[in-house]
Length: 177
Image: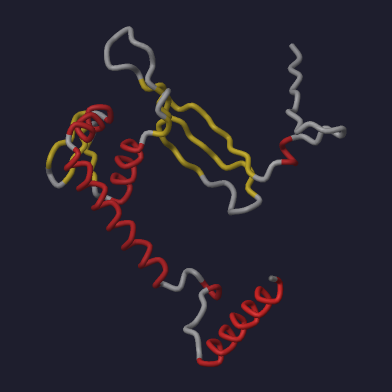
């Protein structure tokens, strides 16, 4: 059996393939199906793994996993639960999820249901995750990981230079009127 792969073109006379024409290409793969609440109901969505196959504007080959819910989009609560687990705010022991020693539920879907039913709990988890992410970012930036791109504190000469630019810009805009 022969398999013929056709490339999608961006149109035009020359038919440049999207592979070369695009600035960002995402490879989206289905990991698992999110089933409906009751048996026999339709699927609610899919858990996907997205890999940046090409990126001309940022570093490529990043990978992300999230829930795509049909008719609703990307699940914010699912991303919050994943981020909480990753930074250590939400703890997972086997199939059970815990937050500050309080059981959220057995299984991911039950934990998400508990979060949706309790806005205070969801707000507490989100605040905790944001604090831990900010701490990690501060530690990362403080360790000198940003390299030579970090700008030093401006000196008096820099202020004079920037002040002169502002004056030149205001003169140009006044002359253009």
